[in-house]
Image 1 (cartoon, rainbow, N blue to C red):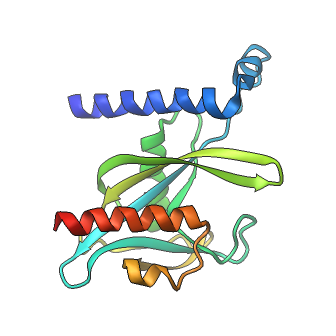
Image 2 (image 1 turned 135 degrees about the vertical axis):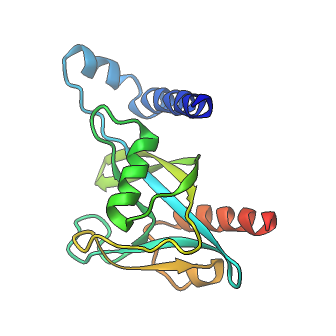
Image 3 (image 1 turned 30 degrees about the vertical axis):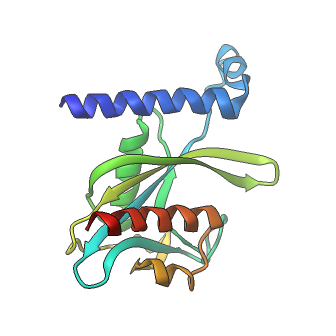
Length: 179
């Protein structure tokens, strides 16, 4: 329970940094004016260790009907709900989108998504570990297929951003060195 509490404290610190850095003071005005709508995204970089292929990352192909980055590959994620902390939101998103309950949740990095020209939403990416035999059950409204990809396979996939590609490669390289 203590480790969970410390992790939540770290997440709250990250949230405050987001408000200060990305909102540049506008969050305080919005609060005072009773406009309490700050959108934040979370992402779950879920990896597993395949004894033959080495570390793999779960990559989901966005449905062609999606408004943002249709038919592109990504790690699971989405918006944080009201009264939900960032880690719980990432856990929920991974479960809803891929049917996976993972362990070893850690903050990986902060990111930004331009949802419309000039409208940028901040985000927090988490890493988590799935069991080697975890079944994947994607939500067809959001994704059309999935893959457990190795570093080499990422090069042939149209990922949502180049930064995501770099972050995944870094994560998988670290896991490979730990083997």
